[in-house]
Amino acid sequence: MGKQESEGANPDYESNSNHHGNLKTAPNDQSFLTILDDIKSSKSPAVINYGASWCGVCSQILPAFQELSKSFSKLKFVYADIDECPETTRHIRYTPTFQFYRDGEKVDEMFGAGEERLHDRLWLHS
Figure: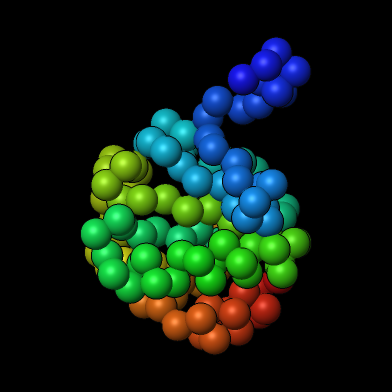
């Protein structure tokens, strides 16, 4: 990575904004804490997708989640793998779980997948 590419890059999270809309992926607990702090101090609405690499349903809905991040530009999209962020996601009992935030507060939660269901919930919170 060249000097210009690394300037301004936040090492606390992986941003996939060039390829997947405004989606951030938390590679570890510390980065997820940074993302959560950002969500909780922001007025912007956000959605967090808690999943796992071994979860078949999670793998099926993730491409749709990535595509939807392009369509709902007012929402911040976050993906957290429960195995990569074990401390900060230990409260998650089902995968996938989607949590919706507005004005820094969790306002809704959805368990399971379904692209149309997810789209409708995103529309509701955007």
